[in-house]
Image 1: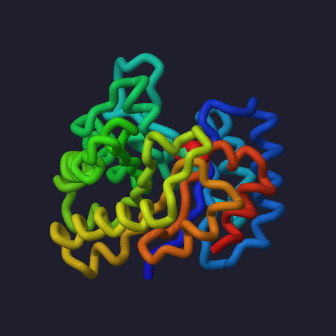
Image 2: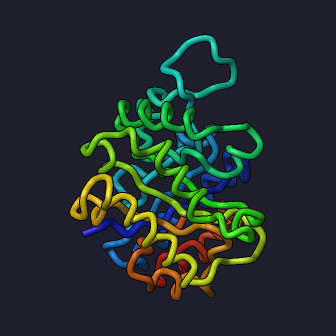
Length: 251
Ligand code: PGA
């Protein structure tokens, strides 16, 4: 059975003290969510140490929003996977469209980040998704296929099982425009089929594929009801504990 996951990507929001309040609130309310749903909070780097301590022994896991593609060395401003591992961080988002867009991250670089994260026992949440012009041109399947093939397919069978995929159509991120549940299902099934062709059906069936992009309490239920949608990567709505919990409760 695939894991159901609802993860909150806080992006560059909250000061450390505000982040602690938010994390405390999420932990306090986590009991309202079905036990088969894993809850993950993904704060900025500066908050990780304290929030990992806070969440330890609770059902809430902690992730980071990025890591470097190098082990260590003269890379000013970067944070390594082993640094995250040493804090007790469990997940790391890699390839978010904002990182691709503003920091020029490429599929090849992302493969390096994924490998190094896996070496450090972190679980990558690999983001993929097309831009509006690509969807309008009917190229969305091709774009996502290329992202998946170039960043994930060099991985072996045991590595791919430790990956979580997030399909996030760029036109739906922070715009209030959500993909329809049908559009999400169609792309998730497409991605699962790519995985099945490469790694076999049994492996593809174990990989969680999350939807991301303007997911909120009012639309999460319908999206999560689709057979290939295993949860959500939540941006804006994860900054309000009640909304984040309401989304997770819609499973
Ligand atoms: P959003 O962001 O929910 O604010 O659209 C999702 C994401 O970027 O992960």
